[in-house]
Amino acid sequence: DQQVKQNSPSLSVQEGRISILNCDYTNSMFDYFLWYKKYPAEGPTFLISISSIKDKNEDGRFTVFLNKSAKHLSLHIVPSQPGDSAVYFCAVSPYSGAGSYQLTFGKGTKLSVIP
Amino acid sequence: KAGVTQTPRYLIKTRGQQVTLSCSPISGHRSVSWYQQTPGQGLQFLFEYFSETQRNKGNFPGRFSGRQFSNSRSEMNVSTLELGDSALYLCASSLGRPTDTQYFGPGTRLTVL
Image 1 (spheres, chains in turn blue, orange):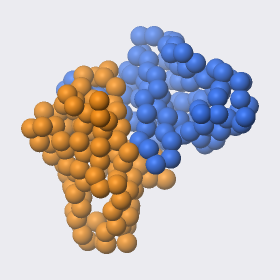
Image 2 (cartoon, helix red, strand yellow):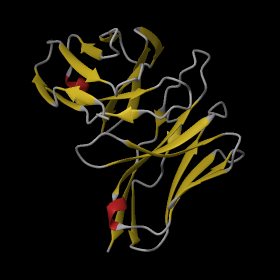
Image 3 (tube, one colour):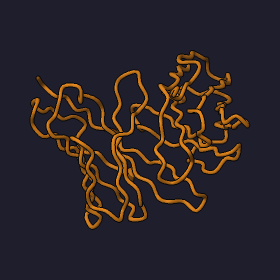
């Protein structure tokens, strides 16, 4: 049973336009939300995160939106650049009592930005 | 600052064998987590070590084990390999607090024949 779903396996966007990647989760106990991107033959690279007490977090061209009532997370990239072409994973985590967290990942969305 | 390193990068084993993978975290990071990535299941959490103690464990059989040394380096062991263990094994390090970013290594590609 998938707790984190990225329903679009792939997305193509024209350079300069907005890319919107979506993620849905099922467990309301999830408290911390992240986006990673991954290039072939490399490990995932952290992009941006948001805690459940916020509904928006911005970092340069990247903005993450959190809708807790809908259990929905989205990543906006504006403007999109060819170098953004990669697989994007959303990840969620509960805060555990042990003081650590374990990430549950979606299966990823492959973004292609067309020059 | 050097990133997370994993050795070896590629490995081929046969069914029934065992394998040990190594991960060196970023200097100063005390938490190391391991993940398995397969096309069908995506990225799945295996376990996390902090200061030589396993703090969290995912839903994997006991054939998957790990340990962490006093210098924070970590090893992951898989015994009695099965074909389904073929995957990219990723480790990630962090300072270890709940909202600290996890930094991933490039992974070890394990193929079981």
